[in-house]
Structures are given as C-alpha cells and as structure tokens.
Length: 374
Image 1 (spheres, rainbow, N blue to C red):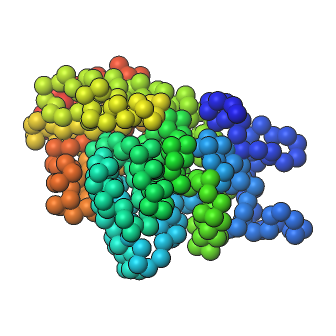
Image 2: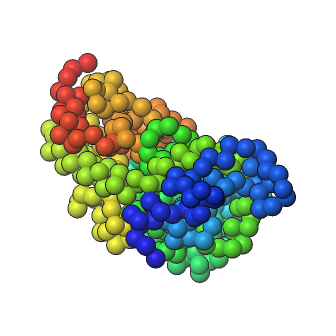
Image 3: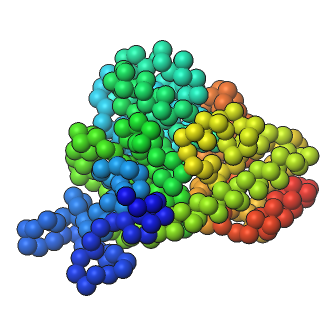
C-alpha cells in the first residue's frame, strides 16, 4: 500500500483510452452500447475515479460521492427506519441537526444529542440504539471523541458507527481503521479545498452498507455531477500538502490568540492544554486547520465580523482562503438557544478556518482586527 501523499496523487484507477494523466470529465447523461455504463445517475467514470481515490485514502472498500455534505448525511440517515434511535454529537454542524430534527424525526426516528467525550454516558445510552453519528473534532467546540472506544461499544451493542471526518480528512485521521462502519465528508471543505464546488462523500468497508448506500444514491438521485467530481478529485491531488499548511497556520494562530489580552478561550486540539489533545494524538496524525476562540470584549464582535484584508468573514471552511465565521448567527443558527448555550456557542465565540496564506500575514491581519474599534 502506498503512503497517503502518493495515493492522493495517483489514486482513482484507470482513466480510459489515451492514458490521460488527469481523468476526463465524462459530461454525458447516458452511454450507448449496453456495457459497464448506461446512465450517469447510476454510475459515471469520472465519479468512479473520485470514489476509488476516496476509498483508498480512507482505507475503505466502497465510496460514494454526493451532491453536498448534507446529501451525504441524508444518505446515511436513509439507512434507518421508523422506530430507530440515533445518538449524535451534542456539538455538531447546524445543518446535521436541522436534517435530523426537521426531516427525519417526522418519519418516526428518534435523535438524542450526547457529549461523546463521556464514554460512560454513551455506554448507557447505546442500549437499543441503531446508529451513533459522531463528529470529531466537533464543530465548532473542537471536542475530541475516543473513536476506538466508541467503536468497541458500538460493536458490542450492534450499533452502526458513523464518523464525520471533515475536519481532519483522511490525511490526518482514518475512522474506518479505528473501527467505524461509515465515514462521512463534506467534500466542499478540505477535500476540494478551492471554494469552488459543493460536494459530499461516504466511505465504508461493510458490503451490506455499501450495497444499501449504492441503492440510496441511485434511487434518490443525489450523486455528484461529473464536473464536480473532477473538481474534488483535482483537490485531492494536493490535499496532503494543503493540510500541512492549514495545520501550520492554525497552530500559529492558536498560539497568537492564546497570548492576546483581548482573547478569552482558545479551542484547538493542537494545544497541549486542550482536554482532547492526548486522545487526538493517539488516533490521528494531525490536528487540522480550524481554531475556535472567544473574545473578552463584546465590542470586538462587529469588528471581527467585518473581516480584514486577508481574513474574510464568511461561512464554510477548509479552502485556500482564511475565513472567520460567527457560529451563533451563521453555521449554528438552527440549533435551539438552550442547546447553543449549553455547549458554549455564545455571542463571543468565533471560528477561524486557516487558509494557505503566509502565517505572518494572517497574524498581522488578526492583530489589526483585534486592535481596531467599531
């Protein structure tokens, strides 16, 4: 087996005639001849190239590319039936909360939100559950769950264990190798990495789950288009290099913010004082490119929301540009107020996604943002 930085460059399989270095975009809805491919909703060579590469990177057997990260979540939740109970991270992306509570709960599926750092609590609540859906690190409070321990508990209880690996990517973390049944990605983020496509992915090594996911994709018609598959695959070619730079900049930003008098709490697993630091070190080879922090002075909120010369105020993360996000009114606005307050999503919390710029320029822009008045 090749190393991850080699797989990201070479993965995807044979691209057809003429031996192209970059896979062709099979921008066609249908194929003639009655051979391997017939209709692009069902299968497409460009999508297969992406899916093969994703499966290799995640140490999985089957991968499925979807039209968005939420489409990927939708596919995983579609494995459930009425009467099933699901445990989820209490601190999770607002869109995942929204699709669970506003859509799937209508079909008789029960959702419980838990602190997945507490394995004792999870062990009690797993009894009778059908699925455990975890984010680690979580968004935006950067909680780290012990994936090996959770996987062991899920096996004991016959519970499907799904992990959203968007923040660390297969370059830094491989949940399937730690015992998870399913890995989910918002490929919009680091996998594509260029702020130019919306995509999602699901990877598994379980043949039964793969067969069902394939049927769900074909039936719901939410597979990723050939051109967007090509964009994500192009992003994968530089993913290892980008992740190293994202992490380098994130650690520099975390250290800078930690020492700044106007900053309260800095939340980043790469800091040794982070409560999940040792667990992250044990199950991952990196800490990612996202840093959350609180400001001491509420008057800084509007200043940060205006962004800077380099740091852009915008939703999303994982692209080449450094973005600052306000979870309270952006990514996590759909969470109930009491839930936001319980997990720490307050008016003083910001999330910083470090891009690929020079770290000295990023830190200088941060200093400007924190120094200017409203």
